[in-house]
Amino acid sequence: MIEEKHLQEETVPVKSRIAISAGDAATAILQSLAAAGALTYYFVNLRGLNANLAGIVWLLFGIWNAVNDPLFGYISDRTKHELGRRIPYIRYGAPIFALGFIAFWVRIPGTDGNQTALFIQLLLALFVYDILYTAIATSFWVLPYEVAVSNKARGSIYVWKIIFMVFTIVVPFALEATIKPEVGDIAGISRFRWALIGLGVLMTLIIFFSTYFFKENHYAKAEEQFDFIESFKACFTNRSFVVFEVLSFTIIFVQTALMQGIWYYFDVLAMPRLPLLVALGLGIVLGVLAWIRWRDRWGIKRCTQIFTLGFAIGCALITFWGRSVLFATVGFFLFGIGFSGGMYLIPLMNGDVVDMDEHRTGLRREGMYAGINSFITKPAISVAMWALLTLMTAYGYNDKLPAAAQSYEAGTGVLVGWAGPSGVLLLISFVALLFYPLAGAEWTAIKARLGVVHQEKERAYLEKLGYKFVE
Image (cartoon, rainbow, N blue to C red; front, side, top):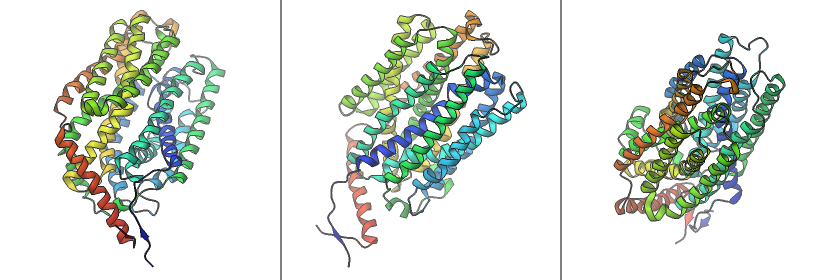
């Protein structure tokens, strides 16, 4: 007998919203440590890898991502596993992801100071780690589109994502403030390594078990996708995507540079942590509340322009007056405003870009867009690492000396390398957003039509499975 069901307002269970958000945050926490200050600090300052060699590792890693990310996005869009298009990569990839992260912190006897051995360890561990990071992070990034059709239901997931995103910022700062060892502190280095290994195991367990608390909608996997070349080209004929990628590259660069450089900023310039971190946290909280309130009144485009400009001003304050507690406090507050915009507005803008693609092509291709986004933004991680280390070294930073022994010029190098390039990129993004097309009455009408299309697709798919809908 064919089961009869009425179409009802779509909802996502609270446990599913929490599971998706917790798994996504756990992935981001490990990435914030691997791609930001902790990993570079560990290999350069604590293990003895030359800073220039570390920069080369990150550049090679960026080249690898040029192949890895779009390819996975394409594959995931075409996946037809019984669990869905995304869940299998999260659940079965989590154990390997853990091994890659743990490999960063394993101390192989006799390798400290051995440039070849440290170079190989960092490079290989990054490659293994990133293959699974790409699979898992991309899947979490697009899951709101896979478990829900309506914008209302997706929005309920993003609220929880924002809440959990706070941990992705707090945890790295907490580790830096509590257990980061100084150069030569053998016992402290050991505690640091084991803490990171333990954190990796814990976060991976959260990622793995999160997949048992949500399910994907499966209608999208029935769609016939473009081939790889056509799919790749179609993304770049979407003008909104091209503008978005300027911003996306910038935000990843800035977040990486700021999270990495803060380790050196507090150490080399001996700045007080409490007022600056309080200002940062206050900026994040007030920023999120402001964007939620002003999003519909001003639109995503204008809100994004405001936060990029404020972020750029914060970078300028740190670059030129970062030794002043007053100016630094204002700068950190603006950093918080910027971080909140990156957490809340960027995913919404990305969703609009993908919706425009569906309006143009008739297909849901979140995976390909996420993969190409990573293809463009992952090099931003490597370039940010390289830029900071290169500028610090050019100003006289010596990675063999403890923080207190660094020169005044080295401190200037930290300020310039940390916030200078970020401020320039943020200003470029502010200008690029003038050409972002997804705003105004016409776009609002397109979004409304897509909501109807999603319902029609869902209904057609369920009818193929034998469901009969009663009006």
